[in-house]
Length: 389
Ligand SMILES: Cc1ncc(COP(=O)(O)O)c(C=O)c1O
Image 1 (tube, protein in one colour):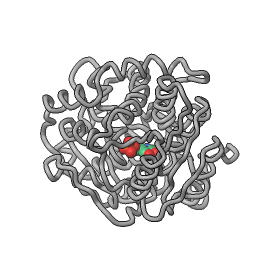
Image 2 (image 1 turned 90 degrees about the horizontal axis):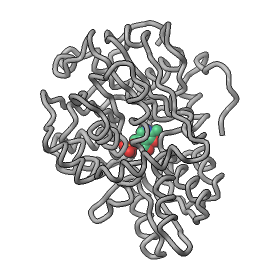
Image 3 (image 1 turned 90 degrees about the vertical axis):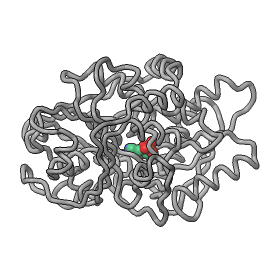
């Protein structure tokens, strides 16, 4: 798309509802992510060496194109030099576990890249051994970004969900501690610490916003990030809740499938092929789903083409906006926003229009540089900056 051109019309599949179920949302938040977990994380992480809040960008140009009063974009690209918001979660849980443990600690997880990088970084800092399970299509660039923190890499055939299963099996045999960003029955405590760490994003955002958002677009893989931000709104934001809109890739829309089934956990299978590597999950986190199911006003599934267009719009922004380096998973929130704004029915159902203020989160920068450049297309490479590692 050229600068300033109207958005293309892309496929969107959506379930929207007039009202979220506030009471089941509040119950699910307090049960799944108790306030004490947030208090601890919000106190601990800002004390880490190198901590700096990430920027919140105003995007008046993109807002004008979309027909909104404002768009604010929380930009997680620079988070602790790891390239994504995930630096707040896995690494935090590893530090909590290391502080509790007397003897040697081995942590393990399955990952699409960003979570494993965070766990590996946290383990290196805490002096713990770390084993990371990657499915067959995780790119070599993402593998290197994890291995550089001293983690052992195990490759697993299949998709992300297969890697989760392999990790669970081996960790059980070896007596390792799994630091997952997703929950399953009987395994919730550690992921809930991971999710509380993500709350730092919203704590910062609330201090940076000049306008209270009316609509918040949250991209989802297993749903942990979205649920964590929704829970942080519950604890930290005074006043009415904004409308939460969850955005998934069309080929891995497990939360949409689950919400369609009344919140019953529903998996999607297959290769889960999408450019949004971080969102390529076939099974939601049950804990996250319980929060999202009560609190979200809509769940959308968008095409990769819409995501790529949003990446390009962020890199080559509308007049008045800063250029933002967003990896595919990072740009998915904006893709969802643009999909809603070109769809009359969804706009009406979500009561979003010229008076609305949207919040989006760019959850990652070019965490895989070669993937990023390939998706930007020729002539769209962002200015400046050597390749990141
Ligand atoms: C960049 C990025 N954004 C969003 C997500 C989605 O987070 P979750 O799986 O908790 O829904 C991920 C997950 O890996 C990610 O890497």
